[in-house]
Image (cartoon, rainbow, N blue to C red; front, side, top):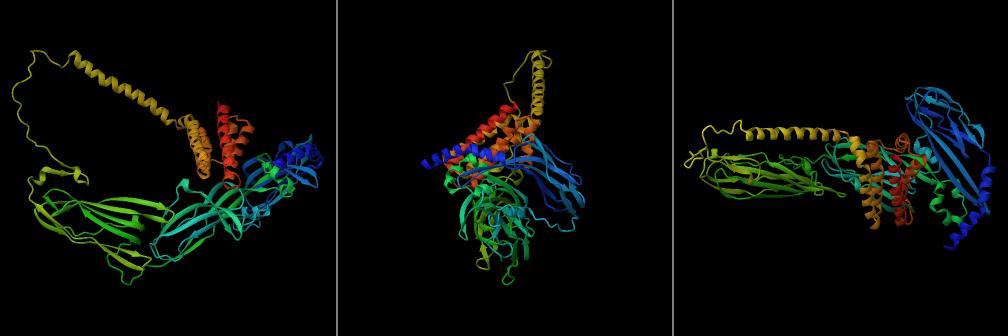
Length: 614
């Protein structure tokens, strides 16, 4: 603690030297972009100046479509070498461009005013190649390599638990992200397709991105499950699963930060000096996965096998075996276990011809766990014997293939015997609705008895029709109908204005998420805390401006807030809270202090934006 105070004191003493060295350095204004791009490709053009400038003027981008820009960002760092403190200050203006047609194009220089003097950047020559040809420039991941990020720093890996399953056997594929750097703004660009598979997601939204630590080749990584899917191959042969692709921002130290004197490390870990970090856009791609699906063995394959693969148990029961004709019997068949349980067909029973049998009611209880799909599938048969006598339902077989045993397993239902007595009522006096015996209802008697004495007598020429009460009762429903119609149309107009309703509820919904986040904060549940904070911030903007969550990004947030005259400082503060939230999930350190700081920042910025919009 004493060392940190001494460090702070020394830096404050040397701050004048810092600013003197900043003013003394030469101002450089440069433009950088890829030299070769493909037709239709999107790429970045960055203008960088190492000083505080104003009046930035961009050139014309002939031959290119401007998708976004200029997006400004600031990087600031300090370094101490041999007791000398220097500061570097850098402002970047980023454009996202798209090449429209082949050819060689020259981008003129841009201008900016620094210290009252206008300076020009260098010009760029970009060669646009036809889409059928391959550009020599690298991908976004290669750009990350050029900026000090190795392929081992951040990567995605697709892992399967079985490479040679049987047809119909459950295979679990997991997409994991490994990182040694703080990352944020993770967005999926391309999901893997699963041709030849029936599949089901195993992770809910709240279960994704739960982090844990792993050591690989002596290096510690933060690891999170992106997706976990249960696959059920529907055909045999070799099947290849394409890679999943995503984009993210990685936060890395600037060169000046990496050269810092170790004596001041504890001081510069203070959040005030987080500007020593810079963001690098990465495009990540997982490995492709090849699976060799084996056909089910033909040897000893039963003729009545219906494709069930896994490990199952069979349970059957009836509610009664002794009854009268035209009464109902419930036969329930329950298949439980793990595997492709939702694809199991009903059993084939041989019912007596005197039984009227309805189609079974099918219900599923599916459990999705990290180990795979399991649960129960229940078939409920409603059976009605129409005649008296002794009857039996012969046993039926359920056959499935067990991959562990590599053989077919036969499960048999018991034989059911029924004693049916003659009914007291005719079958025509009974109707059956639903599946359960509780739903069976008897039709009432159709005989209506003649009403007997005493009679209710009224006076001569005294009628209810056209009386005052008659007209009053006639007007009441009309009045109620008109009032209801007016109120209903008013409420429908309000509810149809989805934007208005979401706008009014935006703050309340955000505070509800923040309240839930506060509970996770008190319980030190970091994963759930950051999920609720992100949900509060993104959900607030989505409801406030009626923007779908899928269309939200840093650029769209900045654009909408600027349109509503929100100050630039407030916009940058909001973006900083979002980035801090995502960085903190992966960054090491005291999680409780970071969680408390981010919670206060989120609460403050939502209140601030709400006040600005009033």
